[in-house]
Amino acid sequence: MKKYLLSISVSLLFCQFIVEAQGVWTQKASFSGAARSYAPVGFSIGSIGYIGLGYNGSTYYQDLRAYDQNTDAWTPKTNFYSTRDYSSSFVIDGKAYVGLGNIASINYNDIWEYDTTLNAWSQKANFPGIARVTAVAFAINGKGYVGSGCFYPSYTTVYNDFYEYDPTSNIWTAKANFATMGRIAPVGFALNGKGYLGLGFISANQTDFWEYDPILDTWTQKGNFPGIHRNSAGSFTIGNNAYIAGGYDGSNDLDDFWQWEPVTDTWVQKANLLGGTRTSMSAFSIGNKGYIGCGRTNGMASNTFFEYDPSINVLVDNLKDTELVSIAPNPFSYQTVINFNIEQQNTVIKVSDVLGKEMMNTTFSGKQYTFEKNNLNPGIYFIQLRDENKNITNKKVVIQ
Image 1 (cartoon, rainbow, N blue to C red):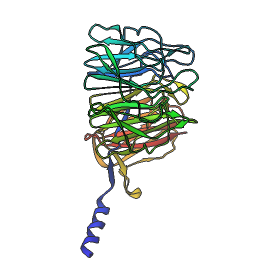
Image 2: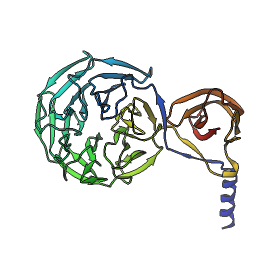
Image 3: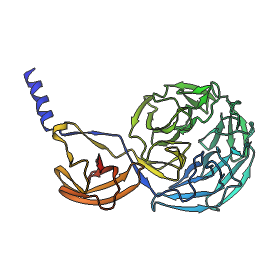
Image 4: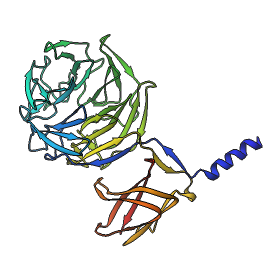
């Protein structure tokens, strides 16, 4: 017993911090179109992401813009057939399928194929269900799946029907209805050959989650989402995991972010969204990174765009009296000093405001860095320190 206690004491003595696999959000180039707060579509094909359509409260949009992950730049593409919001999309074999949605209280059931090589749209067979908004859409093994959603603008008619689309024959086939009552603005995604639908609103916001097996044509309930019940959240998948971002709980927009692990059917909360609350956003993944953009952020239409990297660990101070990094004075008026307990080599220091806008980015080596106020306005700022091993330490400072 004495030997066991001694080993614990030594471990605590030398352990200055712990590493949490929280992942890191980084602000990227803003969407190059107008800010929009209502349900623009988002999808990715290969290494390129796309955002388009949507509504900002007064104007409907039909533009489509492509995001290049390698250059962090947006390029306008051929506009969609018409303006639209609350549309749905899925991707099969390098082509996107976009449709449904609303224009000025008129619901649609049309479906259009976007060919990235031709940069052109062509109409396909209409969705066979009733025209609607906020339907779930995803693709599994070369087939598209669309269902649920509601009638706009009354939201009184909610649907639970579900259909499969075969792009080779251009034919829709009715499949098993969603297992429970339909949803307004649920989330949906495909992962490891199965489809998933959950959350959304029906009489009240929900937290249940369901798995669709396309081979058996059956729905199976999974563990409930542990966060606040919500609708209009964003979702994407990376590797074998799915992620749920933000949404609206009926009173407030949200900024929390969750990872779902299907093997264990467990949810883990991750680092909150950067830039504040967000709902009705575009969301997609490219490779091993996830992206969210546009939507309603902090109550306003947004064109900001963020990248999530789950592979980067966050360093969290383990013993308050032996912090790895300290900043003093804080608050400060003109300058402060960032002190490191360990010699740094090529550590990236990034400063962002409360909305996630990057205000400064520099590289530092040594143990002490003097941070000058310069042209920054008084307020709260977040400092992110990334070392050569991609470990992250986050700090907050206040400029008076």
